[in-house]
Amino acid sequence: MKASIDEDLCTACELCVDTCPEVFEMGDDVAVVKVDVVPADAEDDTREAAESCPAECINIEE
Ligand code: SF4
Image (cartoon, rainbow, N blue to C red; front, side, top):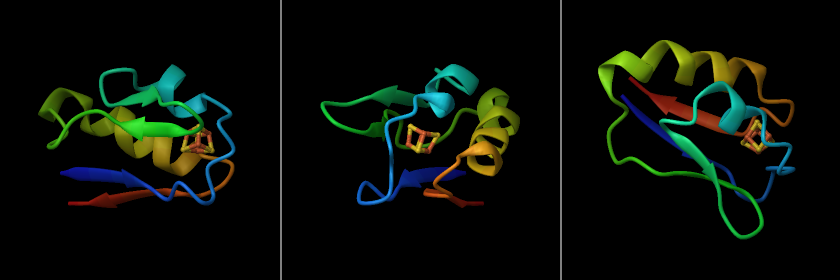
């Protein structure tokens, strides 16, 4: 699984970082994905972060 963030839409609310710190972190202005491939044990939390993102700007490639 891969995850990406549409930086133009991210509001830097930090919810994804709280939900799945293994995959998301705050960059200078917006959240960023810090892994190339999502670790298997973080996939559920990554999906939850994507579903919970208020800006709906987290994209997942299964
Ligand atoms: S949850 Fe969405 S809007 Fe909030 S910081 Fe993460 S990517 Fe940005």
